[in-house]
Length: 296
Ligand SMILES: C[S@@+](CC[C@H](N)C(=O)[O-])C[C@H]1O[C@@H](n2cnc3c(N)ncnc32)[C@H](O)[C@@H]1O
Image 1 (cartoon, rainbow, N blue to C red):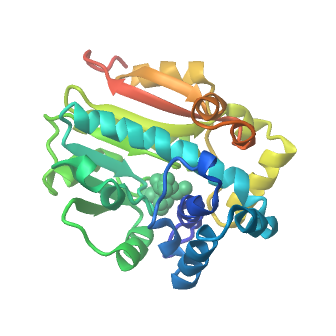
Image 2: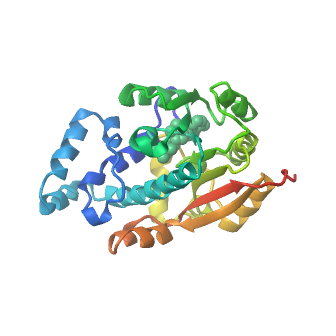
């Protein structure tokens, strides 16, 4: 993160979500009307105008920004999978959602009544949280917490959430979307401990992560992405193999419910050829708080 500036990657992924109306209807899983707010009214108006155009014009509009297409499709899959995790949690009676590294996540606004009475606790770096308030406005559903995962004491997170009304004796769904790859191993593990500490029985944690190979032995394409995120001050630092991750999670008091690659999600959710364009080497894990005490 560059000090005092909103996260570039948060703005980038929000923009990718905001491009959904320009996708062909068969590739559109989720629309996020807040995504383009991050770039401002001119970008919002352009996407709205293109989305009202006939299909051939929409297809032509992608020509100057073709490298964005795999990202827009990837974000469709990521957003849909995690939206469904939120829906199941709320349908099962869950009333507390914590979003770590919330960025410009608009679920609290976008999912509206689907969230029932759930309160959404959004935790992020102060500069990004400030920019979000300016663009999205306030909603009574959201309680925002300014927090730096690298600089602040992670063991203070449960108490700081409690000060906002969060209850550690109740189930919580924690979303940790698009964040783990930017953290050090130390911050990753300390965050797991903090999440375990504020998560009552029946809690879940859902996050995406990159394969270890993307960080350690990147392909030319992955090297290009790494160079960009490094240049904006948010380098990829952390990746896992699913097996090593499951064992680490177990040490921190979590059991894996589901851990699937984006290729698998994409083939289930999108028709070909779109499913084949989605980025590889990335996974989504949904884990639950184990009933047993943490063994370490
Ligand atoms: C790629 S964005 C993802 C945003 C959002 N979760 C989404 O998927 O749209 C990464 C987010 O992690 C946050 N982040 C990264 N490092 C952080 C840190 N050390 N402390 C707090 N937040 C951090 C950034 O502010 C940013 O909002």
